[in-house]
Image (cartoon, rainbow, N blue to C red):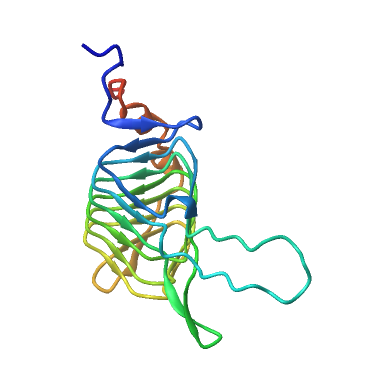
Length: 197
C-alpha cells in the first residue's frame, strides 16, 4: 500500500493554475499562464509553434522573448478547445506570432483559436473558430458556432455571431459582472466548491 496521496484529476501550480492531467500542452517552455487559470481535459495549447529566434547582429540588448502563448489570470479553457499561435510571412520567411489572451477569458468546448490577441473579459462560445491574426478587444461575447475570419478586428462591448462573423449587437451597460470567472474557477479542481446558487 502506497503512502502517497491519490492523484487528482488536476495539477495545481504555485500560482493557482489548475491544469488537467489529460490536457495536451505542447512546448510548455513557450506557454505562460498568468495564474488562477483552468485548463480542462483534452484542451490543447500549441506552445511548440513558437517564433524561430534568429540571432540579431544589432546591439546586445535583452534576449528576444520566445513566448508562443501568453494567458492572463482567471481564464477558463474548456474541454477540447485548441489554442495555436497565428503564423505569417515575415521578411520572406514563415514565422509564428505570439497569441496573447487577457484576463477573465472563457473559451468554450471545441473552439479553435488562432487570434493575435484576445482582450480581457471575453466569452467565446462552443465550437467557435477564430482565424489567424484576428484581434478581439475587451468585453466581447462570441456566440456558439461563430467563424471569425482571419485579420478581423472585433470592437469592445460587441456581441458577435455568424459564419462569417459579424457584430449583431452591443453588450448592455452594467452587464459586465457576467464576465468575472472567479466563481467558476472555484468550482473546478481536486477539491471543488459547489457553485453558488
